Length: 540
Image (tube, rainbow, N blue to C red; front, side, top):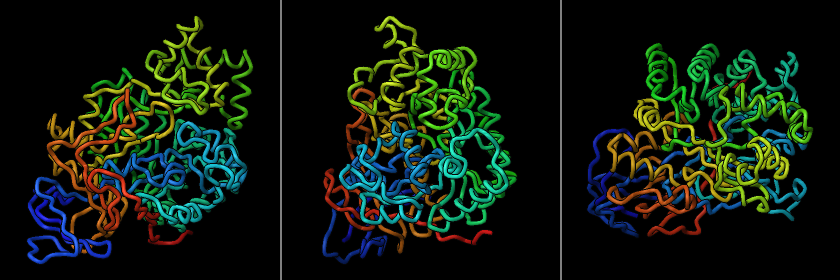
């Protein structure tokens, strides 16, 4: 196929240019003025042609398998997602760990198989893998977009220690290091942590450093959700940078935001910290989504001690009136570690989804408003919902700052990540809108980034972080992961009121040379596969 007359934005950040692009057997065969024809020709005059976008922070771990069509991301021009985020995902596991993780992050990914026994094909999705390699093999059966995977440190800790809040013994640490090494050998690109989510948050920095040494030995990167994005955020970032440098490990800062009232206008302090480390030779990148509210589970706001022992132990504590009062007091007066050390303001916590549709009447309301309608304190409403929905509710937290969002997205180490949770009746619009929102709102409408620079943030730079030798650029010999969009009309369709609307102005998306979006509509192609890192070394 020859794509004629496109405005090529090649992913390097350099000037765009008009050219033809030939695609053959899944690769870019030529770029330039191509007088000859192909078996097919696509007239791309008026369209920009860019490398497919890379979602550096995705929560599609089960969604890709449950619904391989995956229009939520394919329609945005995303051709590669990075899964296994925030320290919790579904491999490596044993039966016990899988059951606990499924319960803990049902708000992110749903229950997976509709409650059917593990491995039972009678459900919506049989979770019949156990290792990282087996999970990647499952993706290789065919999905809409490509996917890479991070070994989730919290899952690894749960596998070895359960949900215990204590230091690992030397033997347990050795076992965790081996599980991380196994995952990297099987193709993972690095390791993630969720340091406000149990059980990963129970790990000391010394424990994390030892795991990061393993990651570094394979040429992978460490992707932490930090210990705080609120009170003490800057100190948490600094500690993470020091940890990664001590381990000799590349670092990618997950959803690198500065939230809550105390961090308004403090993005420059974070960027100065990163610039100093980069000037000193540190290997650091980061991702953000172009919105101010955050999104997580309601249970994630609770203090870490309440979750020790796993999801069932947490439910038991919530059911006990005396313990529940203690939890509420910590949340509302001290500020829990789960809520980033900031006392919770229930007027900023909006219910966005529930695991059980029977509780969807809460969706779209803040906890404060729902409590007022019931004539009870907000914590009692939150506790009631957590128990009834078995930790399933997801929430939007309206705690971000637009100035911080704009400042951070301009940084030279920045990449795009949706942090998109696809579950719930009213998910965050970033799940369906992140990439066109960058192009339409922040490039065309606000001029925060140039189009060329933005594409580098969304394609070239993340591919470089993932060390992909043949993706992320429009260049001869590279894989034909491509997106064609109209710079004058591209926009996110998703809004807070209608979060699942697809974008406009993105008529064509190719994955490995096959159309997954053609004329603005999803095709039936499933060319996506796992993207596995070839280890640079073996451990130990």
